[in-house]
Image (cartoon, rainbow, N blue to C red; front, side):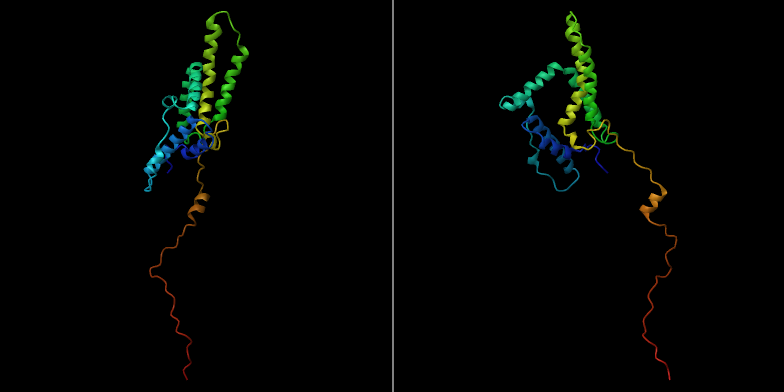
Length: 218
């Protein structure tokens, strides 16, 4: 029986590690997925993975002082936190809900649906935006609308960052898990084989002894 806590972690870890580039955030994400895979292996197999493989980078805020790459990533994260704080939190919540539906309800993460939903919500904002003289109508109202459009986009970006593109179906609109087909009598007969109605013999059959050719008596 498949472990319900396994969300294709090994496949996603390999994808994230292969596409991490210079990003230390992605490197840490791949290491965290690897630690989860090895922790699951320790509970099921006798050959334990090397515990030295469980080392991972510290969080972003702790490594930004010495790493130029982390400093760039910290600036990007800070800008996003200021611009779309509510959308970010809502996107993380949406992502968590969808991941919990895998694989029972969804067979993959619906990245396409989330990104296109963000486009559908953001396009009317750009088309209907008419700056008004008051500060609230000019800044606050558009800012709140952007939070709404950013929520599905953030969830979709998290899906890409966490390696869900490696799972078939993540580029589809709503990849539902197919229902298990009903087992028909014909399928059961093919699996189990024909039903034998002949009972076992009382005495096990034995081959007749071979006495050779009989010689005629003169």
